[in-house]
Image (cartoon, rainbow, N blue to C red; front, side, top):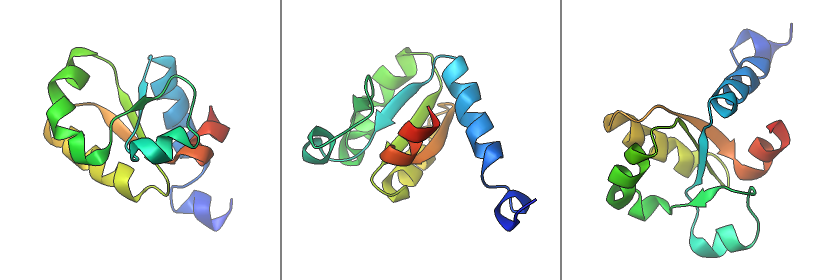
Length: 103
């Protein structure tokens, strides 16, 4: 068992991603539209962090868990905080390219 596994990183996170995906999770990329255009996960939705609050009702209507991602995991962490405040089941997928590798 590596130090990261001991601290709760690694496979446990991947299991959670797999669980969310198995339940039909929506991947929301909270980067800017320009960043999203330069590369993104197929079928993900681009909702930039600064417009996330305006989209809360439409996200809730999806009735699906959400995996948030961005460039490094910082903005997606903020997005998860906002989504949880509005009772949306969600998780931070971190950077979009590392999340893509887990899918």
